[in-house]
Length: 214
Image (cartoon, rainbow, N blue to C red; front, side, top):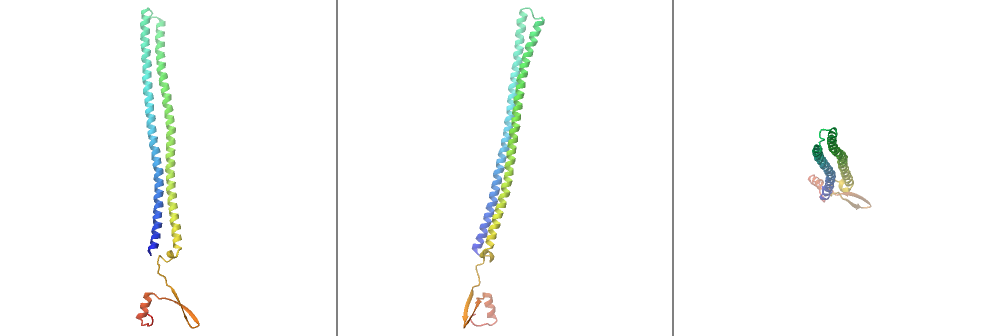
């Protein structure tokens, strides 16, 4: 096979190899995007958990402060009413019970608001997580499609190039550039054509004793 034919086939092979690498690159690109989205999902989930912990800690401190404030108010009320000599009356107990109830209601309201806020964070986090997961799945699917399409395109291009090459004279002859050249001679009124024999044919004729131009 001549150098030109070998170079043509090598070029087609390199083009096929390049197409395969391009398909892999597209797949890796989409997979990298999917991994990024999955990482962002994990980060977002951790941030939401941290936010919930922060809300609950703050609510716990505020609820404790409300209860402590209620207890302090109760003590002040006890001292004030004791100084007036009404520490054993029915009204005295009602006032104390009311102060304790109010402080507990404040603490419960603080905790309720914190729970609602925490639930909102969880709900929003689940929605964001679902979006991240859906986008990541879409990227991986796109990567598989790009890879398959790239391989199909590269294979089809290689087949078309090889078919075109095989239909050329170089492809049909297997890359050989040596051909028999017909030689025309004339003798008298008529003419005939013959081809130049190959070196093996000439050697065979010479060994059989054929003379002449051999």
